[in-house]
Length: 411
Image 1 (cartoon, rainbow, N blue to C red):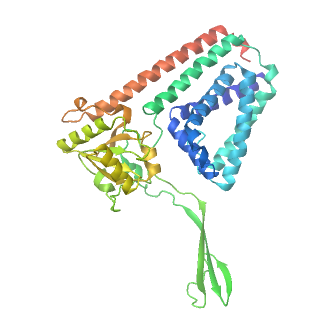
Image 2 (cartoon, rainbow, N blue to C red):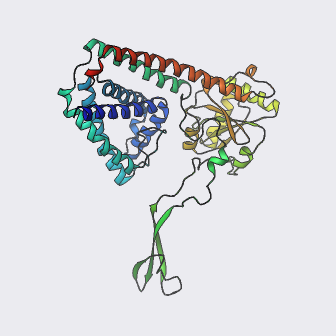
Image 3 (cartoon, rainbow, N blue to C red):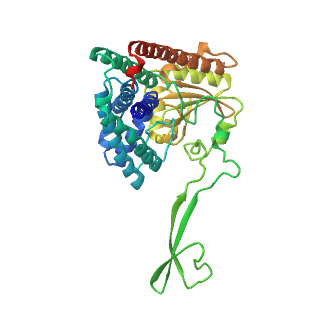
């Protein structure tokens, strides 16, 4: 029984740590998901708290996981985990039935589950959560309260630091299909033999004032005495969906130029601002200088937005923009880069680099060959260095924990 209690505590701890961490690295993504929930439930007036909630939720989940995994502040952690699991099990059951949002976002973009998969996952993990809660009095005290709070406080600083970095720059880990190095046409392709969506189709026909429902096997296609009224198509089985299935670029007149951009063998800079009314203009001068430099070098530099034409015109006039804007879906733009604005560099359909508006490269960093890979690698190396520092410090605390707490006490 001791082993079951320990295993339950470790399993739930790992789940909460993973769930909190993948949300923390991408706080804007979590905020967008909160907005989806608020919109689905008619609570748009709460949109302004989505970002703070994303910070709070990721930190809370991560710290609950730390509490359970290390067995510290266990009463608080077990109560919190039971409340979390109970609430989200009920919520995901509602989502599975009514499907107001297609993905609960419980593991960010790192692991996408359907609503029913999420519900059954919660049911499974609810069991060890209850085991831990009912066994509270049987877990030994491992540290003094001050040491426990010091331990928790350290990891609170760690997870908030990860979130702040992801918000002010770009996520350390990019779990989305538009990560650096992706060849977009391949990610949009449908593999040969891939399963297609399966629908149950019903056809309603009318004859002599009486309506009748038919299937694809018996509908009266060759009987002119029946008049078609309506058709109902219900998705029975979801087929394969390419990682990228919604990427299009259109002129303001509606002409599709997606392939023109994707198959351009030269460099293409994409200035991405999903909503020009919310775009941060603090670095617009540097962006305009980069656009002018790109044009001089013969590189493509275009803006992608979901804003209306008059909003585009106003933005261009206010900021003396030297590049043209094109239309792309708002959700797609939010998925491509977690910044408003952000910058993406393409070459022949491959994403070579992505930059937050605070990290737009200076012209003197570039040369005739653009050094795209070097610039992109520098950012990734910097991110990894920061992450390694976090991991080493965390590892140090784990070692101290194992030194301080006798192994025999863990069970």
